[in-house]
Length: 140
Image 1 (cartoon, rainbow, N blue to C red):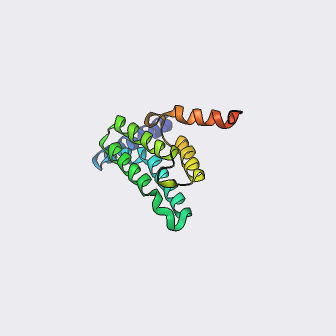
Image 2: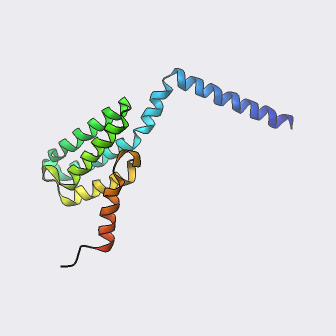
Image 3: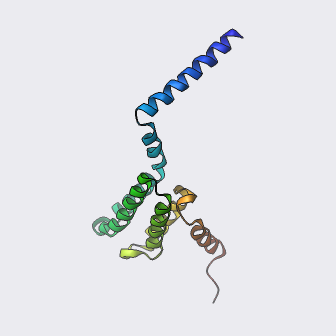
C-alpha cells in the first residue's frame, strides 16, 4: 500500500514538474504548434499536388498563400478569421481557381474535410458534396 502511494506521489510530482517546465519554456506556444498540425498537413497536401503538376505547379501558389493567411490568423488566435480564410480556401478549390485540375481540387477538398477541425470550416459544404457523390448526379 505504501509503495503505490509513493509511486502515485512521484508521478504527480513529475507531472507537475513537466507542466511547470512547459509553461516556463513557452508551453502555450507548444500547444499552439500542436493546434496547427492540421494546417501543416493541409499545406503538405497542397505541396504534393503542386509537385504532381510539375512545371505548371505554380498554379498552387495562391492556395499556399491562402493557407499562409490562415496560419497568421491561427497564430493570432482569431478563430473567426481562420474560419473565413479556410472557407475562402474551399471556395478556391470548388471553383478550381488558377485552372487546377478537378482531380487535384477534389482530393484537396476531401482532405480538408478530414484534417480541418470543424470549428474552422463550413462542414455543410463537405456534407453536401458527399451526399451528391453517394446519390449521384441528378438525372436528366
